[in-house]
Amino acid sequence: MSSLNSLRGILDAWTGTVAGTMVAALERVVAPRLVRLVETGTGTFALEASKSENAPKELTFEDGKFAGANLAQIVRGSRVEIVLQPTRFLFRPLELPARAADFLDGIVRAQIDRLTPWSATEAVFGCSPPAAHGSESITTEIAAAPRRLAMGYVEALSGFHPSAIAIVTEGADGPRIKVFEQKSRGAVDPVRLSRTLQAVLALAAVAAVTGSVAASYLADSLSTQQSELERQITQRRAALRGDGGGERSPLALLERRKYETPASVIVLEALSRLLPDHTYVTELHVAGNKIQIGGITRDAPSLIPLIEQSQHFTRATFYAPTTRSPSDPGERFHIEAQIEPRNAP
Image (cartoon, rainbow, N blue to C red; front, side):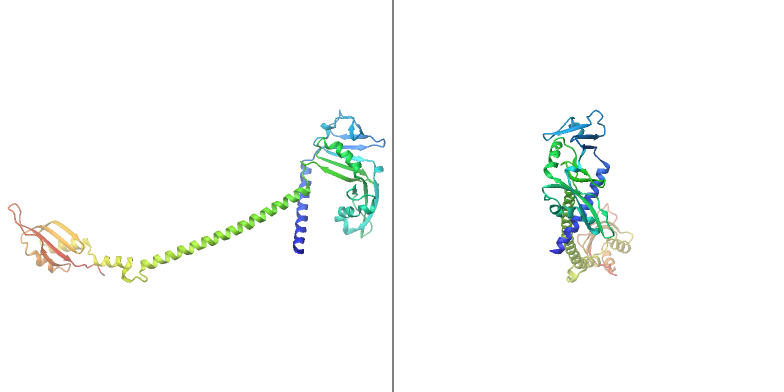
């Protein structure tokens, strides 16, 4: 739990720093117009604003309203600073260790009820920039006033929709002390921006984890599919090579048929060599290991021994009667024989 709290603290500090830097940069780039209302010793307010030559320079605050000028056009979208007289505030000096400079606002808030008659919720308060007091301590001046005093001025100006309203006073040593600031809803708030950054980081972390899990799942699924494909390919290759199938495998049967089936080119070549010159072949059929030839020759019976003497043919016989017509130059024959394959190496 302590580790989680430490991590949360580090994240809050980091996002707060980033948000503050972004807001400061944005305010420098798009700085709203500054309108300052300075309280005089008589209780009236002097108006200090650029491009307001036609506006009255002095305003009064009566019955919770500013009177004497049309503030709606001047204040709208501007940053308003209300500078109150120091007599309205209670000032207290505070001495702290030098290392407390980074936590000054929190320390002042924690001790405001001890230094003033009001609690932190009942007062508006602020402190001047710390000044070194020796080598190991710093001093600051705290200014505080009742909250109801400040909220009267704030409520009088809020209806004009300024970008921000701040209440300040003159410190005893010169620099002004800001005791209150309220930004409009449209303005960029470092706290809200810090929370938004934390939400974005949380969503990014969730998306990263989800993407990692999805990628791991897809990788496992693809690996399983790849393994299955490799297994099927191995089985197919084994089947083609005859693994476990012997001579019944497709490759073995194909190779066996290659050597057992006679080549037609060799059959034609053998016939052309053994048939005499006076023999003319008009028909030739090769079916499996059997050949049938028909044609015209001078001496049909002499063809049988010629064919059987060849190493490519056996069992030569007439499968149809031998005939002779007056128009033929010889005997018309029909012989079939068994082909002996000689393709083996």
